[in-house]
Length: 405
Image 1 (cartoon, rainbow, N blue to C red):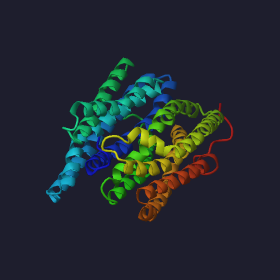
Image 2: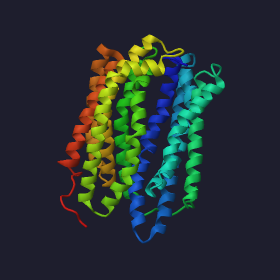
Image 3: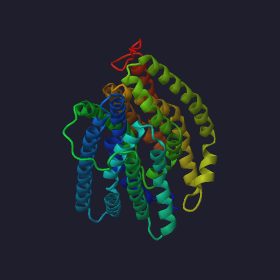
Image 4: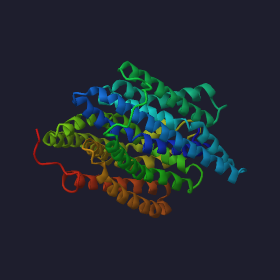
């Protein structure tokens, strides 16, 4: 409906800010909290889970409201600085409409961690489809009359619906939606440390995507849209398979780590990693060659032209090459989270971000949006290889050679 014009660019830039912050500050909650929830469940004093849950939920909500306030303040400053710039006004208005995403994501991820730790995956998995469903429903309901504002409305409404469903699921699981205030939990400091490393890792990992979006905005109208269209299929495939797999394997890895069974953990990681790569590599190669046909059949309608198809297909083909590396990175990070060794990935992600940024600046001058995609592909491949070395050969994340059990 919106093609690859400036209005869709504005929505994508506005959405990228709360989305990036939610991934950084809220997305880290699940891998940081699930190992502790699983470890508490293995102890005789299971009742201690409630105070830990109360501490985590309140701390995450406080942080999310603070970050939301900073975003709103920044948008207001931008409006005052350039009040006559239509693009800035539109981005700021859309950002204001989507600020509730942050506190909603904080509560949703805490409740998702509670459910995942209890091996309840169905409802958290279902909530992943809410955003596209609500956005599609909003677009059909408003038609052309709502413009890109209807996309922001659908996005925010989906976040609210996700919180409502997960809150109800937590209640059914026997946990209070809003637990009573509890004194600081003894192991909360350790979880804060893991959370800090995960936030840093997410910021560094998402930083290349965030930077790529803003660099694409400098290439002219429609470039941000083309980059997002071109990377959308890879995101969908990751959500359908590897992301769901990662949710399931984290409690399994965490239990092995809590029991000190390093042999089982190493064997499980090797098996999951090998099988995932066996599937993702041929899929990536197949989609690389059929990328133009896929874009033509799925996107070339309405305001989306044949010229858009050519540009998006080139970016999508390159993004498909990243798929095996993204799958492997996600699995390795889950293993490190289970071992509470997230600190070892910070220098690795820092090196990958520097490499990706340098390549983006170099390649986008010659290949425009495709250059950004190539830089990201090389950066992800390098990150995957470095994580393999960290986990299996060197550094603090190295597995013990014998089981403790």
